Structures are given as structure tokens and as C-alpha cells.
Image 1 (tube, rainbow, N blue to C red):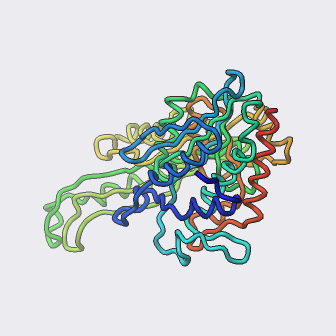
Image 2: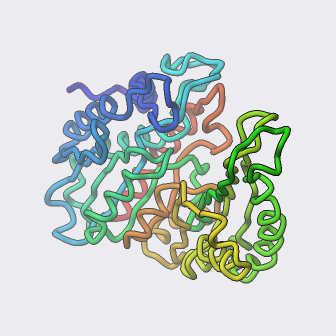
Length: 379
């Protein structure tokens, strides 16, 4: 195939291929990552990579490009942006037009993370004749599913994690190196009751009233315990009551009630069994274990990669500054699979998921140059 003429043209082509994560857009006709992954595979082949597709979910593969012969068999460097995007509902710009206006490229994924992907691919394209001269083997993986549960990075880390010494995850960080972030766990607490007519509530069992005293006691307990797991860099873990629902009509005693707690976990809490352990211990102590059920409905791993890691020092050597982030990404999953990982890329997270998502062309070009210089540190 003919490689796009510039990083700008490359990003436009990526944006024009919809890759909305269907788990983020139920009922919206989202097609997933396959078409975009196939196009990325052609770009990688044009750079000289051996390309494979690892189907994680039906029709939703990771696309992997390996550059054979590079690194003399040494452990490899992994470049890892994600292919999927969030929903396009409510956007004020045409999500897949890749319009250029006032020096910015607009469209879903422009910032998160097709911009970082385009910059990485352009750097590989520029160095395509020199990759075999690097001291480390290089692999590019376009990860599926990052925006919901991260099955792509979980699968990749499980299958291939032992083969990599460092992973650079593509996220919009203003080219700062995110080496630590909290993890996220969503716990769903549920109670069951017995419905009856609202005029005779004594004949039923109100599930909402069963859960209310649990929450009124549990939340203060958690807020008193979570500081025990504070991190010197990230601060303490947090908990937020994000959702509560129950019942079906004002004149029916509710038979079920559900509350969702959002925990942001530090590495210390994660390693101690996490929020799930704290909640279960509390319910057992208060004899509520048989009344309340607890279900994990979403989770991600915290991240902490030693700043002395060789890959981080190389990023610092080309001007990147160490930082942390309030969000989570595939770096936590890859690190949990044994690959020292960070996130670093052009653009700002403030532009991600917005109704007029964009990436400035100057940021894209700076990111392409940044990734090329990073790869050249392995000469």
C-alpha cells in the first residue's frame, strides 16, 4: 500500500475508519475495531513488520506488528496505543470526517488515541530502514477494547508479557511520562425484598430500606480505612457512591435495590486484596453478609513503574517529565502482566471524549518527532 504522505494525512485516514467500542455504545450500531485494525496492519507491513491479528473477542482483534531481526534476540520494546474509541453520541463535529480547521484535526479518536497511534506509526515509517540496527526488538500492538474493561491488554499481557522489557502506551499526556495511576473498581451492592401493594407495605419486604442502613454505615467505615493504604505519590484511595436504584413504581413495595460504589485503588490497596476485601470483611463483621450481595462489575489495575526503569530514563533523556494521572489505561494491565509500562503521547486528556474532540497538528508533529527520538535512543 502507499503510506500516507504526512502524519496529518495518516491521522485523518485513521479517524475516517470508525472503531467505536460496541460496549461503550449499546444499540448505536458500533462496528468495533476490525476495519481499523486491518488498515493498521497494512501500514505496519509497509514499514516492514510481520503482522498478525489476535482475535480477543469475536471480530475484535489486537493487531500486532513485529519487526524481525531487530535487537539481536534481546527482550523487546512495545509500542501500545488502543484502536477503539468511545461513542460518538452528542458530538458537535462530524465524528469521522477528520476535518482540519484552525490547525486542528477534528473527529472521534483524534486525541484518544488515534493521534498517538498516528505519531507512533509515522516514527516507525521514518525509521523503517533502521529498525534492525536498534539494540532492542520493537513490536507495535494496536489494542482493542481499552475503553471498556481492557480485554485487549489483558489478553496481550497474558500471552506475550514475558517477551518485553518495556511498554510505551499511547495516551494523550502532553508528552509527559505517566508512570503511576490509581486503579478503578466498581462494586455493585444488592438487596432483595418482596413486592406487595404500596397500600399494605407491612405485607412485603422493602429492599431499599434493607440497603439504606448498610450504606449509611459502610461509607463512613470505608472512608476511615482507605487512608491506611495511601500512596506517597498518588495519595489515598477513594470511594464514591455513584449510583443507586430500586423499585419499579411508587405504589409497589420494591423487591430489589442496587448501589454502585466507585473505588480508586492505590497499589497498596490492590495488593492487600482491594476494596472487595474491605467491603466483604465489613459485611461479615456487621452480620450483613446474608443480606447484601457484592459483585464486581468493572475493574482496572493501578500502575506504578519504578522511575529508575531504563525505558523511563530514555524518555527523560529526550525531555519528557515524570507525572501521574487521575485516570487509568492499558499500562496498568500490561504492568500487571509483568511488563514495566508507562503512558506517554501528544495532546491533552482534556480533549479526549469531548463533543468536538481534536488534536492540534503541531502536537501531532511534535509527537511523531518525540517517538522517533525515543526509538533512536536504542541505536
